[in-house]
Image 1 (tube, helix red, strand yellow):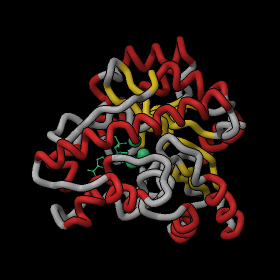
Image 2: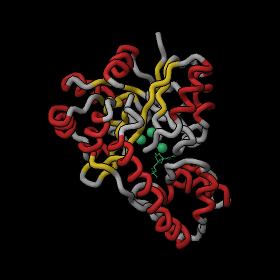
Image 3: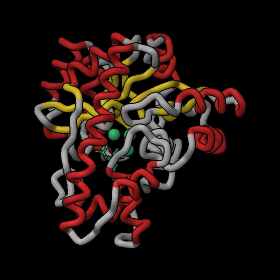
Image 4: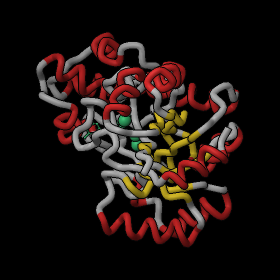
Length: 278
Ligand code: AMP
Ligand code: FE
Ligand code: FE
Ligand code: ZN
């Protein structure tokens, strides 16, 4: 049976492995196919693709787009998108700019909380990533010795609504689906019933996204979902004709409990995604 993990992050966004290291580790984790789905950027894909050819593993090119519904954060996975598509590329750039723009406000809040870090400190942690995020801020706080881990930052003050949280621009989910399709990709909602998006992604809303906007799939098998969530989402996906995917949401050392290959996608589903995209 092929082992397929369709949700991972590299240093091109907030993962801690280079794309090359991630692909090697995917091979070591006995995966046959891995999708690189960095937040709001295609930057890691070329290096991941080259590494995948070298080590002999399948790479599905992906992206995890920061979207929203009624102001609530929803993550959209796009598979097999044309990375040269101008509309999608332009939107991703706009989201990344929003990521940069929120930083000074977030750093001001951290200073008020007695944990000053500079933008340079954050960029030292994000390295060459074009997609700077809260995990990099957390890494800067760890480097300063204020806290011990990313987990501690999110549990304490960086989580949505936390004392140092600052919202940022994200694309309306319907528009995100349209942009993915316009770039020849397949659109799957990441961890739909994870902590943040579960409030807005009711069965009715998911049905509307499927029937009126052509949503392709739901990431059912994800660590944020318990067995009851998975059973309900699987039944809903079947009823609506949505693809059921699974992925670890691996972030290297940046997120515990999300080991490569800990959640997987059925080979038949992967084949459909690969066929439909590109
Ligand atoms: P941002 O994209 O800057 O809004 O930050 C959100 C990112 O933080 C998500 O992509 C998650 O990967 C990451 N994140 C959320 N909660 C945690 C956590 N408890 N530990 C590590 N990373 C987290
Ligand atoms: Fe992340
Ligand atoms: Fe996500
Ligand atoms: Zn993710």
